[in-house]
Length: 337
Ligand code: NAD
Ligand code: UD1
Image 1 (cartoon, rainbow, N blue to C red):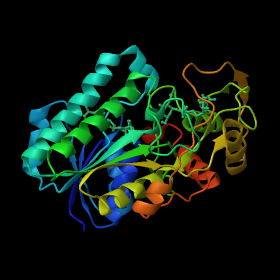
Image 2 (image 1 turned 45 degrees about the vertical axis):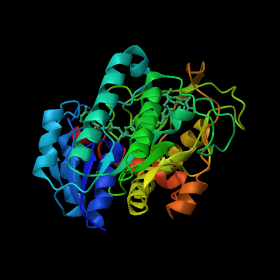
Image 3 (image 1 turned 30 degrees about the horizontal axis):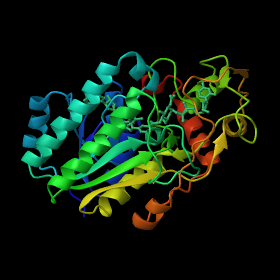
Image 4 (image 1 turned 120 degrees about the vertical axis):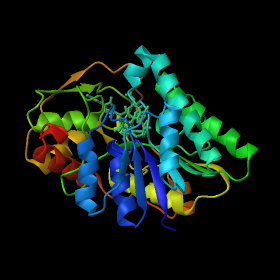
């Protein structure tokens, strides 16, 4: 099976962990990333951890000429498409930038793939396409209804992929809806390095534990959940990375969609307590109002991926947070330290 995989956004958080697993499995990897939300140091870390050097192409996917050059220079056999903008709040403030970047990048990629007769694609979608879910745990057949421009770009790209695959039977596309990716490589030398104030819970909690921020704000303790705080399906980034290899190995004609989650929920207070246990540090917090757009609970039904991809996410919350803490404590300021 190994061949040459183009990993768009491969210098980013999930992409870099997936590159590690691909290289370990014997694939050749070409990373295409404009470094708009990542660092070349991540590519160096991938090479150090695996002893294999991925090819690195610093290109903006919205530039079709530049991306075309990548296809000219490398004999790409399949693509994993992570590149894109992903901050929900920013997408509400700058919708055009989100639609333009995420959609145009994908149009360019699909065009070039067809032109070069590359028809295998794995795409990063998100549980955010379900909006406020009607049922829990959430199966792939549940109603979709994203509540922000970021989520709408994901659903639009899913629909575009379905139409493209329906029009030409050579396409084989796997849409992966991630739940809440957290954690880091167990070496402590590769992890999530958000720019500015983290939007997501785990990076924020880690920065409080390491002393970079004073206090976590818990967005509501009056939700309809066992302890009143929000419940999410956290998944270790390496389990998620392995899900991409499973998707590539089991890729089938047409376009299929899979939830990648654990099916196990954890609350904000569970995350705080477990972080305190694994780090030995106190995590100071205050309960504040709910964050606009938040939901009480998000939980995957991962049974389709378990059955069809022969993949299962089994790393526990303790392992996720212990690995995140190792990365944070060894690199308190991310790749710059
Ligand atoms: P990330 O920001 O760390 O990685 C995305 C990478 O894409 C970055 O390295 C960035 O520099 C690059 N990029 C952005 N725009 C680009 C462009 N126009 N051309 C080339 N490169 C570009 O994000 P991540 O957390 O690793 O997420 C990867 C993918 O998974 C994204 O598509 C995201 O929407 C999706 N996703 C992420 C999460 C999550 O919680 N992290 C959840 C669900 C889905
Ligand atoms: C966010 C995104 C969602 C994306 C998902 C996975 C928003 C509104 N939604 O959702 O589109 O698919 O990440 O990347 O950004 N929390 C706090 N304090 C904080 C941060 C978070 O209490 O400082 C709480 C939240 O209210 C929630 C939980 O922690 O209950 C997890 O939050 P977060 O990590 O932002 O993930 P999601 O809300 O699932």
